[in-house]
Every structure is written in C-alpha cells, then in structure tokens.
Length: 114
Image (cartoon, rainbow, N blue to C red; front, side):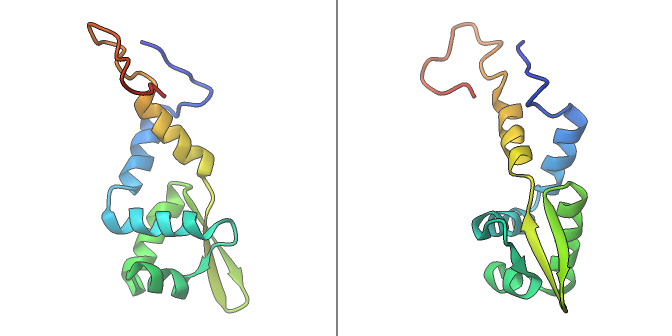
C-alpha cells in the first residue's frame, strides 16, 4: 500500500476531522465559509445563509473550530468566522484517495487515483 506522510493526515487526525464534518449542518456551515473566502462571515450572516442559528450554530462552530477547520475572531461587537484549513480539507480528500485501488486485482484505469 502506498502512503504519502507529508500530505496525508494520521488516521486519528483524519477521523477527528471527518467526525467534525459528520453532520449535514456542519458541512453546510463549512461549505458556506469556504464560499465566503478568507474574509469570512459574521455569525449573523452565516446563520442567515445556512439556516442554522443560535445555540445550534454556536455548537457546530465549536466543533469545527476544535478540528481546526474554522477560526473565529472578534471584530468590534461581531464575531467573524472563516474557513482556515483549505490545505487540511484537501489532505482529507487525499487521505481517502491515496490508496485507491491498491488492493484491486487489476489496475483501475477509469478514474483518477488522487
């Protein structure tokens, strides 16, 4: 089996990151922040765009921040949330694909192997 330790997260880190993304609402929140770019969104704007508000949004942001996928900063009286781990998300995808077809009897030529 082939592995690339430079760009592939350890199994425990990958599992924790995937767990943080294991909710439709959290995935929607992260996707919305990725779409917003590096400037991020206020919590109010994020709630409006995702339909997730209040303590539920706070809970999801806490889990995403703990997984280092989102950062929160104060800007006056507002809290700005931004996706920060673009490279980490890309590494998660690579984690899944890096060993694609490694144990297959015949090489898989019909798709990209990461």
